[in-house]
Image (cartoon, rainbow, N blue to C red):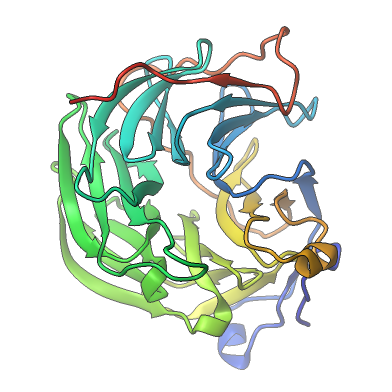
Amino acid sequence: MCHTPGSAQPTVQQPSPDDQENGTENRALTALSIRERHRMRECPVWEEETAQLVYVDINARTVCWWNPLSGEVQTVGLRDPVGCVSLRREGSYMVASGTCLGLLDWETGQVEWAAWLDCDKPHNRFNDGKVDPAGRFVAGTMPEASAPGLWEPGQGSLYTLLADHSVVRQLDRLGIPNGLDWSLDQRTLYHVDSLDYSVRVYDYDLQTGGLADPRLVCQLEPEQGMPDGLCVDTTGTLWVACIDGGRVIRMDPETGTRLCTLEMPVSRMTSCSFRGADYSDLYMTSAVDSLSPEQLLREPQAGHVFKVLGLGVRGLALSLAEGPHRPAQLKPGLHPWGRTRLGSGGALPT
């Protein structure tokens, strides 16, 4: 049973005979969402200490913090598009904004910029990123679209920010570097290049953060949508959000086999991450930007965050960047949703 955008609930697509041989079953699901509409929600991060969800709205240039009990959303606004956010161990959050990497202090809304990259590419910005199992922040840069659906190939890079704020370029000549995560044994990096419609795997040196021996996990067809954000569950399988495909797919990284497909009620699915008390809830972000007025009428939930229950698998806790992490505190003087504090952070690094 396939689900069409605009319906209220996601479903699991009926597995093919090959999928059934792999033990996949059709399941009933329940979906909840953060119902405020965002332009380009991405990078859902669960903060265990406070049981809050942190994420970004790339095009609104905000880092967002959602309390699932009260429903309140607070935001900190930055001056450039915000590609991703990660938890840090020293009272702040790692952010990638514009072509800079920095440390966001939630209480003040200020950013201490640590690195400025791609200085020779004025149309680039940071996109997705995540902290590796050793505490290093890994994030990719991509070109902005020169026209709707048109990006210059070969402009992206993948960078690693080290604890001393030095930066290593791990990969270059990428299309649109996107979702990334590590295998259960921490020896493998899975990485999406959206422009190539591909998910690749690299040998990962946990001591240095170095990459080697790239291999193709899967190549999606354009009609399936671009692969975007991804995460790994405790069985070692991948969950990949497909933007403009209206789905999140689960796949076996060893064979590239699709195990099941979550057909969503909106087309622009951007990322996914297992969160909640036991990491059994799959949170999925979506976008509203680039939808036509007609599409918006068909997809009233576009730009929401969805939570899917009952998948029968769990995710992993996220790694923290170096230094102790102090979680964000709800500010009684700040109104939920729509009020921001500017995080200018002073001058850019030179």
